[in-house]
Image 1 (cartoon, rainbow, N blue to C red):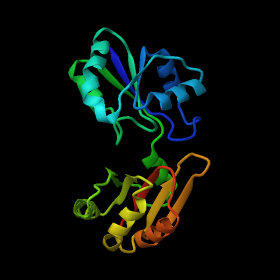
Image 2: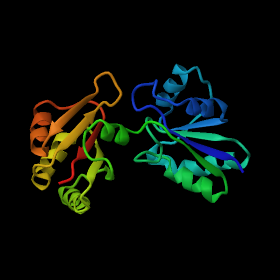
Image 3: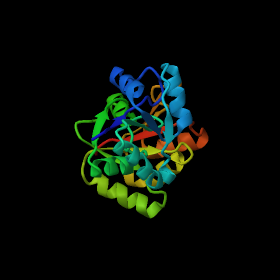
Length: 222
């Protein structure tokens, strides 16, 4: 039995990596990365030289058997995404499932997460929350998902592209009404900002001044 380590990596600030994660990355036989260019930069910043293999979302299923075969030979693998925790709205779940099915040990190496970082600094109730990942793009599916999630009465959290953020907030403004919405942008980076308002207010703000960088969106409970 070999080991696949699921390693959380910084979402922006390269200092946000645990001592355990650095040790695992130094000691593994192969680092499996969503984008080898991003992960190579992280490894280089910490003086780590290990072989890399790409596991992009669009080709994950096809590449998994070859990686499991390497586990079968006794190699240890460390799985990384471009930032945050692999397999949580990022590639990796296919590999994790296949590794477990083949009898290998899968070990989480926890660390940075955009969702928990945003919640911790938002001021919203984070005693219980509903994470929706990336929202559907079509208005009908988007509103049906949000309606069902809002019925649970908890804070909602989702991820959105800066290119679609204003549109998503505009489409959901009537449904969300006067609920408090927090948009956390560029978390842990130099230009980290938190924007607070209703969905309608923030839709107008971001329409007039489109955001840059990755966005985490929180919606307060009623």
